[in-house]
Image 1 (tube, rainbow, N blue to C red):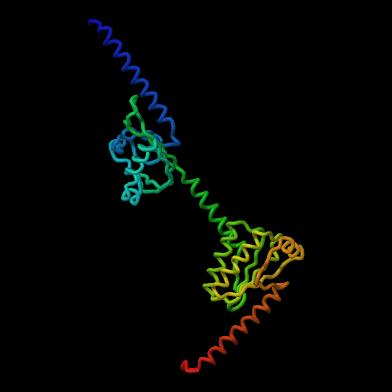
Image 2 (cartoon, rainbow, N blue to C red):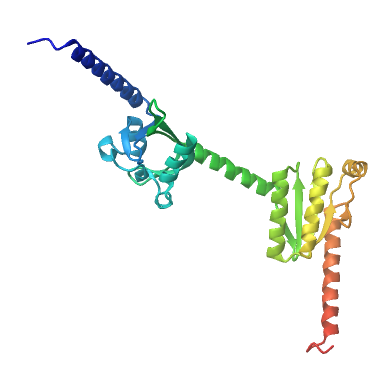
Length: 292
């Protein structure tokens, strides 16, 4: 058999080296099973599919090669054209990152962390896209559980209690930060609307210190309650708390104060009686047919 020309031998060796390199790259990609590594063509169709992608999505390479990447998207994301927007963003900015829901072959949803980057040739032209997908479902559920537990703790730490008809009490315990303070006001105003409360009692006996921030927030809450027609009473002020408020020059305005919760409840019942008497007097003045 005649020996091939030297040029053909050199070309053959180069092709062999390229094939060996591609085999090595594919072997490395298949060895990564914690991530789905997918190559997409310019139209967003699957051009290469790793074993990690098969493990994550449930499809074999034969089932997905040539199919659009939106195959693995939720119905709502597919209808919204998310796949096209991802490619456009990656094309324009050089990178696209996303966290959202994807769908496995069996229809089960999972939380995915996605990174999409364009692949360029030597001239800088985009020839394809590399997409890396990680399953974040466990982390997402853990974060949701912690968020729910935190919200439940916040609810328990700022309970609004109806102690009498049209009388609410809000025992404030511990230190107020911005998140807890906002939840305190929101929860109270919702409860006022639900119960048509006329009096709310702020029991701050469980607050270790009252600084300017805490006092200002309490006053803002009192003003918000007043706009809804509710009178506020504060009780449980410790001697050291009173001294600190005087030292800081905190003006409580028209906020009424009583030393104990019992005294605050007595004042609340007195206010309810006054309101009822005033309402009855208005009715008598108007007369049965509004003729007065």
